[in-house]
Length: 163
Image (tube, rainbow, N blue to C red; front, side, top):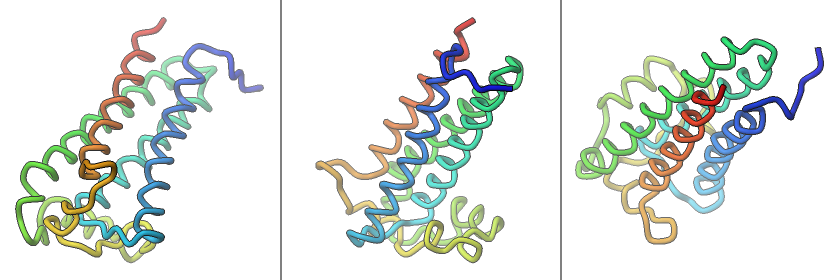
């Protein structure tokens, strides 16, 4: 079976994959090259981006099956909503507290054992208030993340509505 890059939604699915995984790449460059330390909510959002990219890629690979492609897009849309919720919570609540240890994000990361399995990507090195001080072009990182989640959600929604 040959993959058809011109099938409806193929470009959108690839764009969702590249943008979401690219966001993780930018976060890792900011962390490892520029010393931007991530909090639990930052790291949790990385995981959401990785899942979005993975499901978008699966949707792209399942081009021959419309139900599988639509299912992948629906999962992407749900993950985008979760990402928006995480970004809003990080900005409005977690960033106001000095320590966000043992909050929801910290418990999820601990339950999945991500810090031990893949520390360069999932190691938490800052509290929420400390991470909130970092800015990119004048805005906190969680605002940029929320905007990207919204754009990804819009693209997934547009793709789902196409026949």
